[in-house]
Amino acid sequence: MEPLSNWPAAERPREKLLARGPESLSDAELLAIFLRTGVKGKNVIQLAREIIAHFGGLKKLLAADQECFCQFKGLGQAKYVQLQACLEMSQRHLSEQLEYADVFEQPAQVKAYLQARLMSRPNEIFAAIFLDNQHRVIGYEELFSGTVNAASVHPRIVVQRAMALNAAAVIVSHNHPSGVAEASMADVDITRTLKSALQLVDVRLLDHLIVASHQVTSMAEQGQI
Image (cartoon, rainbow, N blue to C red; front, side, top):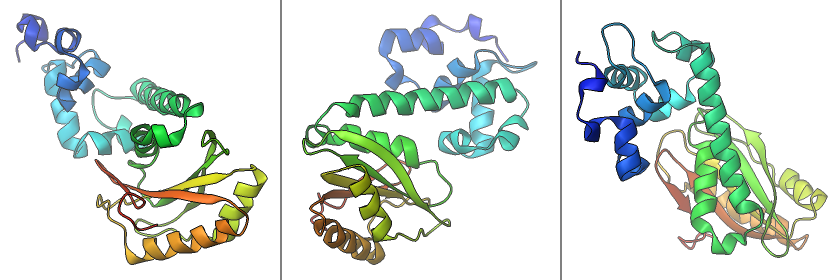
């Protein structure tokens, strides 16, 4: 295949990003910048496309464990380490953006942070963001984990952690590995139970966010809290 250096500058991923911004790039083009070079007989764009096709999408590639990741020719332990570092930097960046902000003023950032944390997890994870009385973030904790379609939630544990952190409010969240960001009846029931339990210790439940691949649903926005 034709070397990438022979392509018009406007079509090369690095130059395209500099000229038009990262949002203008396809998944394969973004991955190509990360990979930097191709392999024998394939330029980096062709390699990136084959990797994404092999894993079934960028989301599944990012969620792949080390063994699966390193089995593909052109990837390896060094690339796996680099990718994990990139993902962790992204999560820390989003966390720092929230650290001193009133979450009521940053709903999009809260959703982006939880999506980065939870969307690629293969099993259901139930997490909580604990807030002070000015709705600034005290901490994020993953409290329960489960199977592909369920995680048992114990309200007593959520209340205990809120009290231990001296939280005034809580935002809870869990992911739907199925990719459908809609609240089930079980989600509605546990949300109401959590709200009542937290009210007993004067802690507000502000929202329950459901995270899927490309969407985050707010139960508060839908009037379900």
